Amino acid sequence: MRLNIVCIPGDGIGPEIVTEAKKVLNKVAEKYGHEMVFTDILMGGASIDVHGVPLTDEAIAAAKAADAVLMGSIGGDTNTSPWYQLPPEKRPEAGLLKIRKALNLFANLRPAVLYEELAAACPLKEEISAAGFDILIMRELTGGLYFGERKTVEENGVRKAIDTLTYDENEIRRIAIKGFDIARKRKKKLTSVDKANVLDSSRLWRAVVNEVAKEYPDVKVEHMLVDNCAMQLVKDPAQFDVVLTENMFGDILSDEASMVTGSIGMLASASLNDTKFGLYEPSHGSAPDIAGKDLANPIATILSASMMLRYSFDLDREADAIDAAVKKVLQDGYRTGDIMSEGCKKVGCKEMGSLITERI
Ligand code: IPM
Ligand code: MG
Image (cartoon, rainbow, N blue to C red):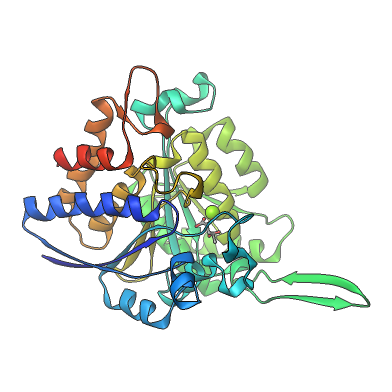
């Protein structure tokens, strides 16, 4: 099979981790008889430095023409980087929001899994972590506060900023359908998270989720308020399977969920539209403080490449091979700094990539 993949190395540790993911994918191609065609595009700060904007129309066109996009990370230190002196629409993150919208990537899947081998890194009390957990946060990605009208005005000498949170029922329905479809393939439990005790957009969210739920009688659905969900994620994470929520809540809860695994450097993500097309990226950020030092953990990006093979190309056997190689490396005791524990062998980004590649 010929796989046309656009890569966005991006900023910070992005280029290093994408290089390792390509290494693994090339090995998969060699072993299973595929052809990987990689085309790099610029996004974020890397694009600002060359083109003055975080994402060009040409880059969007290249991404659209591909079968899937594999991304590293974008953005820099918001306190010190000159990128953050630019107007908001020219900053690195604007490129990410633009590509999500341009490619209609409305469904963001963020697994938060407690790895047996890394249980020691879990910050929760042992009596809580002992149950293990495997949560899939499904975040709506192209609506809500992120894409509503916003402006800053001055009224009678007082500055005022306005952000708008809107959802129409179609936007809610399509992510709910994706959520239920996926819940059906997992443990058949879906927790829809909202703030229906305050927000109209949440009341509509809840109503539409209930409508969709009627088509999935085999999936158990429950509704939870977002503040309670934030609490439950640290109190009893094992109660969750699929967590379905809107854009902003999903941004916050997915960071929380990934942190309680203790290994954010391990967590992949997929952003999907209605077709097989998807953008795959690690759940973590660009970590500018360790960029270029061969210290980053490439596993989240490598597992994102595995998700790409599974969701965009239906190459389950190849994806399984990557997942198994990652597991084997951990069992063999290799760790990058972020997941290091006593008695393990500490390795850098490149070596971790090579160790996984060898095990494909
Ligand atoms: C994420 C990030 C982005 C978001 C930022 C970089 C705009 O935090 O992917 O979770 O808020 O969606
Ligand atoms: Mg975030």
